[in-house]
Length: 179
Image (cartoon, rainbow, N blue to C red; front, side, top):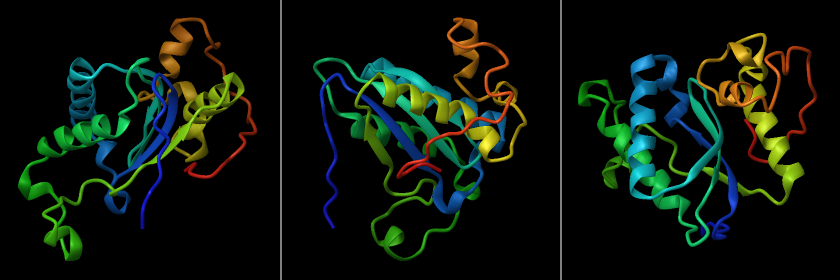
């Protein structure tokens, strides 16, 4: 099967990445710190801007804006996933079987990721809301601000949204690829 991806220079994209078998890798603060370090290192090599992000125990949602002359988000994700994987001691990695073993792959991440190029400001804002409300949707917290691994804190600090955003239930428009 051939996957088709949209590679538009300078565009903003919504991404979903999931851990292998939904293993809750990001339940531990040191693993989140390792993931953040992997992001920082890749951003230093290949710049991009993280518009919004939430790190859930077993998946990540993010919006990135790429530079005007660059559309290669795949290499960035590959390098982030690889750098994070290298921080997990061999004895803590799940056993690899079947095609992963034949291809010498680790069992840390699902092989693919979901990507959606954001079409306009409305689409962008809808996905930011989805990201920030995701911990509530998954029952991890009662209000979005209580989830520590979310860009909602930057949005509040920058006075883009109020600290009580999402305190009352909100209706999100779910779409293909949303968790």
